[in-house]
Image (cartoon, rainbow, N blue to C red):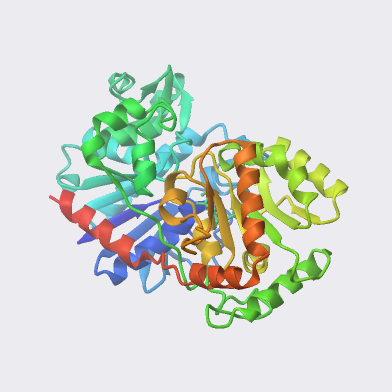
Length: 467
Ligand code: ADP
């Protein structure tokens, strides 16, 4: 079986969020499962030709490999992609994003014909790829090369839909009839995600709970009607993580490697982190960490309401994140007021490893969370997730039960600052019970969220729609 995997970001080449992690790890897992898979993405400025050993196929395409020989095809178009950011600069979207990603979709389809790689299924991901299923069923429908190519559209986050003014429709090359209720039109604008959802043969999202949630008005972001209509075609497949990258036994950024059979090393990393962050070096003080995009989705508004009360307790708090300026300001103020906090308003992969390893509790109070990778990563580092019961968090974190001693984290249900605070206090009570906490840490580290099972689920999904 042949699969073309289309994603606008892929680790290690370019990343703004979890989509890149998935795109960099699922295709290699598919290859191991016996699928012939190629990835296609834009060649952004950050995808350095030398660093990533890119080979020039022609003026419009580079090629390289990922994992055990998965070919990555990179589309070269300097005027669109040779820029500092992937989608935006200084918090503002590039004004020509519709042209940029319409180009990406067209060029990806043109390329597979040029290199004569005819996939059984094109696996599209998020709004940037939304035009691919539409092009196949409209402009390309009479071209024999594209006949019988099926599409899957995976929603990684319904909150990002690719909305553009209707006047820009011509830039997609599509006819005016497609700007209708049964096409790309969404409250007077062009909605690329909606197009993908309507035209793809099958839809998937990244956890079973999120697959249900998006069919409700609360989480459907206005697309719940379409998703309810396509209910039978929607599958939830949980993301895995790359255990080569996120393994405290192998990670080079740590001062000491550790695993479930050697958790002492975790506390050496905690002390090193405290020292690095100029916090009091004391392994007994509970260290709360959070690594996130600073966006409303991530529950920062409820965290903001209680954070002062939290840091007034005998805890330490480290945040690594970038995004909404209002949260930058809020956390800057917090760090100037409280010495037991450390705030980094930037994207920093190496520091992220150190925080995952050195913290005791990892906060994910998200309002919604399609899958979430932070909780899966933190579990593997023995850092106990404290999360809201939503989406993939509900499918992967089980609330600790003090009586049965079962569970791998702490959960709260109501999206309320008070509920978050209550869960934090509950986790700190358990933290004070040394023996119970150690067992919890070991149990967390033994959880398995590798790609093996999920890759198998995707293969079955591909088989179910393959012509
Ligand atoms: P989302 O894709 O919604 O941003 P996920 O939890 O699915 O959230 O994935 C986020 C990924 O990005 C994780 O690998 C997380 O460690 C990483 N990440 C987020 N913010 C930062 C940051 N400021 N620095 C380093 N890594 C970050």
